[in-house]
Length: 316
Ligand code: RRO
Image 1 (cartoon, protein in one colour):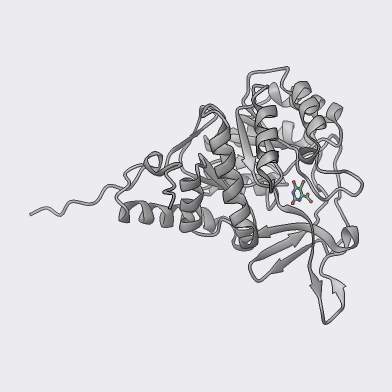
Image 2 (spheres, rainbow, N blue to C red):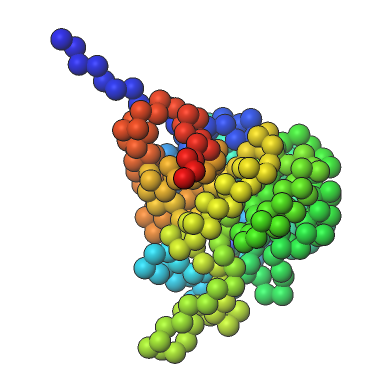
């Protein structure tokens, strides 16, 4: 008698009509700034290559210490260190050899900066453009996504040119009025995806021994990441999944370390998930590990395909 091998569930995903070989990719932020880091992602099982958010000009970022690992995540205030957008424009053609989607993260310091970079990347080898409306760590610059008037204005400006799918990286919201207001703004424009959530901005971790914050920039105020923020990410993904039309895809981000974490985002309605702190801490091995764990969970629950569980949260 031949033993039948249970079929491996299908993890391939579609975000903004672009195909991804699996459900798990890197988030903008950790280990995706230099060309070597991006090639490393190309060789890994990350379903895409996502870049660190770029600005018009190269930036060193904030003074150190600016990243601190915590028992269940991290706090950081990197301050947008990056090579400047022209360096990413230049290296994109060399990253196409991996045959996986290239996602450029754009984080202009003004609407005009975003317009200049979006129009340049619209003519590049990038497959998707993620415009960051939620960096919490540039001193004096508020998070765009918390200013609804400016969010509307910025979207009007950056969605004018080019056919490449454009999405935005949102901060976390904590009120249903805010979810609804943001969803209604997004629906006015050809936004193809959202990435939800960024780190929770302006949190403070204090070391009682040294009596100091654990990071230096902004008097210790920084973005909270990792498992601490997973319930907030799940709530944001699920709220936006209910409020946005299905044509707008959702990347879930925030506290994904395991197949179970990814499965929870799948139930909440995420089309794919991005991994940040776990990748920072564990390196590229995490992408295959989390994918395998997710496969095992789906098999055990008799799901043949991730689409069968997507958004299938069972309410009590
Ligand atoms: O570089 C950063 O400090 C940073 C950015 Br651009 C962001 O979008 N989110 C974050 O937590 N850190």
